Image (tube, rainbow, N blue to C red):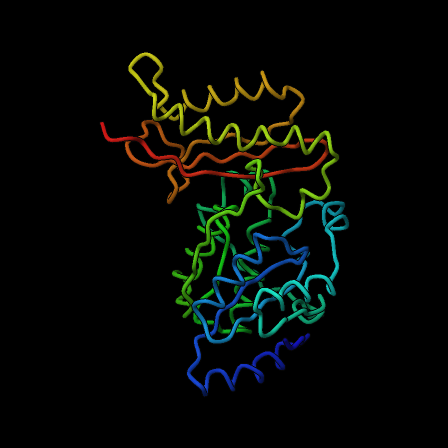
Length: 290
């Protein structure tokens, strides 16, 4: 696996793959690789002739300087894991390569970026869209792989690629979970043993949301978005009252509008602070035939 640090060197290196008419797959990351990232790399390897992985901790998508400072960085470890998973090329630019002196051009996403993370992390998706557009322009992949754990990010990127006519197919990959159901995340490493145990409430709430939807009756009305949300809030308060809630939402998976009656599918999205660590997760729940 080659390790490159400049946009020009990446473009030069990929000329050979294009001449050979290879499909180029791309996995953008901020490092701190875990099994979730590796599943993206492996899928890209199974579908593409050349796989590019980038590691760049993007400062413009952090609205909290402390969060940026605390983000784990270990490029040597990330490189070894990426290579083992099948990456052919690692792009690890410095901040000055991505944001040269005097940088002033940003991409502003639309309505999909306003709720959930967009509400609680102002400017986050502007940073995400700007860096992803730049990375896609540098790598120019045929296929780019994104995990469904960051569902809103996936939808925002899909919309951006469509709106800007970027010639890359966005491939979504299911969330990889720990044995107890907690979604894989670089933030999990910051949880104390006690907080790690308490974080299990998140997959519990997501599993329960599906169960409540399946058992909905005219009495429980848990096929109503607002009613289902209130059930989940009450369950959280009874199981982990100390958890700080940013949001528990029941939404249309594609528009990210709050949903009133769940006739088919709904996105249940959760963001909690547990033990001082902010965790997000989601699940698509499906109504049974009526």
